[in-house]
Length: 385
View 1 (cartoon, one colour):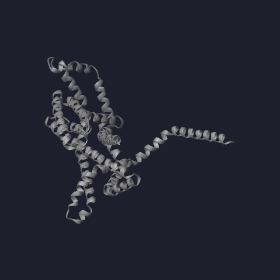
View 2: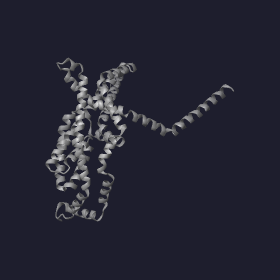
View 3: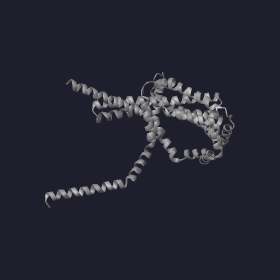
View 4: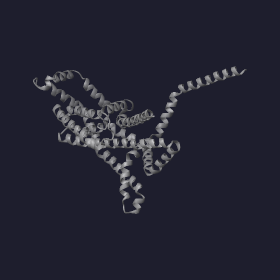
């Protein structure tokens, strides 16, 4: 066998082996993805621990700085451990209060709403059917539509199906079953323990990552990584904490306003508006629409109108005064970019994607601005040369 034939044989043999490998890879792609998915599920408690430690980092740091000025040498020496302990005690108290007061009230409101939904529906239909012909609602054909709905059982069937499939009486048993699951308890335990160690050993972790970066990258790249780390950390932490705090404030003031207006299920509606307020732009609109629909059903059109006016005023106060004070001007994003980011994030990653879309877009914008600035300086330098 001469050299030319040998090379040809090696080529076809390699091609056959490569074809078999490609075929086997495509044939077992589902197995590969299942293995990757299983590995990611295994690591999920560690990802959650990093997220929890990240959220609690700033409160822990502030408490630690307070202990640094203590006169006791023992407290100074163990100030980090004390700060982590206090932060977790506060977190446990918040969870305890939520599960003992807020969540039972919300569950009770949802249960009562679903139970009385057919009665609310029939009473609203009766009201719209008996309005006078010269009223504004009659001019909007509300009476006609109400009479048409009376002839059909479509809406009532939909509500009965909702009540049938959402068995609210078994909600407590569902929640207990989830909480009592061994894997969930184990994951929560691992998440909490790992997050505590991350907070306690954060200086060592940062030092290790910095040394690793120094070994792998050159000085210029390291400086760039450090710059992006600090700026990205500031963007994400400022945004997450400000949005959660803003949602909490909006939920409280909205609930108080609805209680003053004697809106039924005020706490539930305030919770819905506060929760949806975490999502920029769309969240506030969705929360208000849901609250208006529920108020129309439970309290009538005019109460819903008053409620909508008050809530929209509060939303404007929040958007123009409260939120800017909390968030500041650190993001400085165009509304078009925010809406685009929220849309894309929600499409591909659901509610979490909608929530995190804004800081991600801010980070991408930061990188693009730095890239254009660097390229611009490069072009100026080339022009001068």
